[in-house]
Length: 399
Image (tube, rainbow, N blue to C red):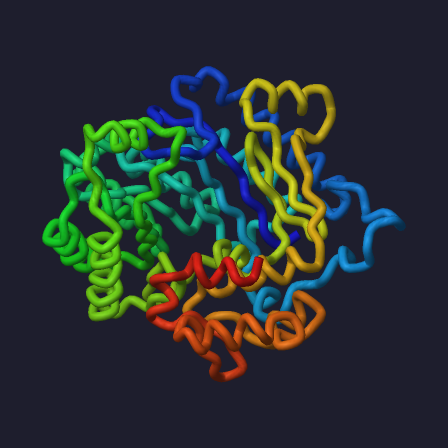
């Protein structure tokens, strides 16, 4: 297996906007969780690098569900391990070493892009960061989200803007030469001037990679309740779109390539996320982790204690599986690939899906091109500038 996602669900505090599978005030379960995660990885390693994580398609299943190899584009990616959360850096260095050692049975560490998410305010200083780098973690993704301290407090973040800057500098000094910073726009109380000031500041930091996301109000979160009740006001769609356009212009002027709808880089695109966008197969382990081994998608048990108990009983902690059809493969290849500014190449689609783009979607492609939402050139289909603003409308045509 070439790509592996590991979920570390622990947080010091749940953010007001967060809808991920994360848990606060459960530090006492970290050691038992690490043991279970290592045991799950050992189970996966015994199953022919995960190919047998789920039963093979039966004779009664349609032949469209036969496994397909990656396209040449996907095959060219580096192997990857991504530790997400939650806050993976809540693990001690010893625990992190055990997890990476277990993961190496599936994805060899040498030559791999090994990413860890980290939150400013929880990274344990230069010594921890140097230790993390020495273990082989070579890419750090830091969730800054805002440089406006009052907004950070509304979001439930535990760091200040100054601490975010300090954590970034410490990571550089610890030897990390591939760092991503996450920011959110369309935040409560945020206006265009504040956002442009943030962009002007961070483009001076010489960061390798930025992920910039429009705020999504998830119904299960405290922030959704506050906005719905009128206690907090967020920018409207037009204001948020203007912030996105400002990011495109200002990061482009600063030399960043806008290679995916929400991602910019100076020559270091995230290999793990490229695997997602190229609709590659990948294994996942940890509570609530989602994996994709065509023709099936699977999800692990959500709850920490339930996950630990399942592994302790000697079984893979898979909670649900979904059988994917050939139509699912085609639709997801388009929806994920069109997020890339390079779009979907005809060669990639044919290799991954087993037929040509025109055979699958000639009518939809022609219609979307007529609407000015897609363009076709260099044997590729990609979103136009207007299409990026209406991406969901485009993606829906392929469902």
